[in-house]
Amino acid sequence: MADKPELRPSPDRVRETLFNWLAHLHSGLEELRGLDLFAGTGALGFELASRGARSVLLVERDPDLARGLDALRERLGAAEVEVVRGDAFDVGRRLPPAAFDLIFLDPPFGAPLLRPALELARTLLAPGGIVYAEAPAALVENDLQTLGLVQIRHGRAGRVHFHLLRLQQS
Image 1 (cartoon, one colour):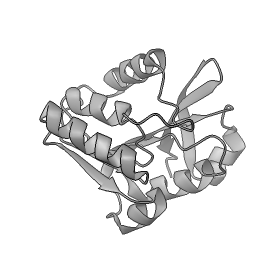
Image 2 (cartoon, rainbow, N blue to C red):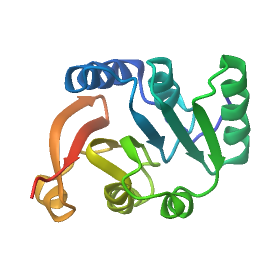
Image 3 (cartoon, rainbow, N blue to C red):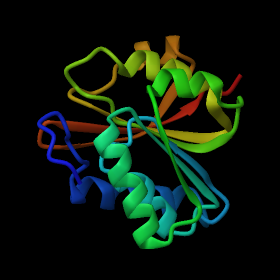
Image 4 (cartoon, rainbow, N blue to C red):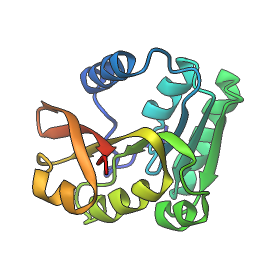
């Protein structure tokens, strides 16, 4: 994968915790349709695919990273993984509503992208679906409520806070 200073792959410990949580919340990951809007190295999406997800869409705007994701998909023979090169928000707005069971959001920490990404994810999330979000600080419950989301799990590893979120029940 390309060496990019802004690239911050999810630490192994965080990925392990995330997939333990998901295994607890879902009896099987085989039917899940996943979306990673800020794919980067693709670690989360490829991990989901390796655990049997039905489909995984990786969105990456950086051309070098997108080429690397395509090469990795080919090398792994991961036919259930699709790589789309483009801006997360442009691509996301063209996707069908309620099309994904699991959405990964790990935007660059230095840019104010998480809130608009959460707003977009709400429209793309299937009923009963889960959003995974990484942030430099814990998400605030009141902010999540204004977005119509509720936190179901939260963890921290170093300076990374990671969250599992669901749509609020009406």
